[in-house]
Image (cartoon, rainbow, N blue to C red):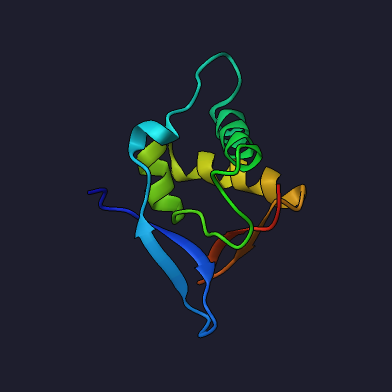
Length: 102
């Protein structure tokens, strides 16, 4: 079982459902010449378009996502900033990053 928990949609009580996350290989970056934050951005967009990430679901915490992808937290923040600017995620302190749409 993965040590990281992926958080699902919020319940009526305001708490997120938790379930075991995908393994690190599911978060492997595609590689190539693009900066790593762009690769992570593209990976998350792809997972949104495939329906693997649904609106209301939470992404793993920055530290966990960085560990899963083998990148720094700065790289994760760069990717999340792009997604936030497009309105695909909402980032809130102490709440996390929540998927808005795809």
